Image 1 (cartoon, one colour):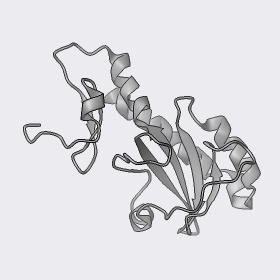
Image 2 (cartoon, rainbow, N blue to C red; image 1 turned 180 degrees about the vertical axis):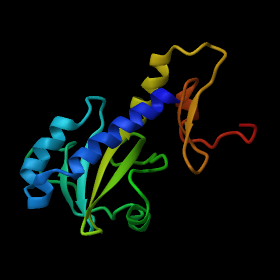
Image 3 (cartoon, rainbow, N blue to C red; image 1 turned 180 degrees about the horizontal axis):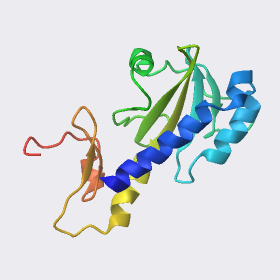
Length: 170
């Protein structure tokens, strides 16, 4: 759990740092895009920035200068605005990327008001690799479970487990 916490903590630290970028204060999204691309991990994750209408201003999954995806409503904007950052999503199985992800959202506030939703999308595969790196004993089972009781990552049989509810015995 410590290693998984560290993985999520690194994503949070990256978002926290980016949220304080002077480029966001001045509205220089070209510079912010450059900073986000330099900060994004090389594990298939990406960073996006949306305004409160859901319009994407930056998306590191898209090549620099390419058109950005259409607006997507900010996920649970009330929860984002009300809770301290970060907000970790439940498993998103049908992500536009074509593979399951977990999103870590970090509200960017100005004068106490949320002005941007800064997010990092983590492919489930990046969480799976944490289990593989730990060399857990064969008799052990480890999993990441979201708030809905759905398996996000699992040390054994992830292909048949991810996206399914945990058994009541767990």
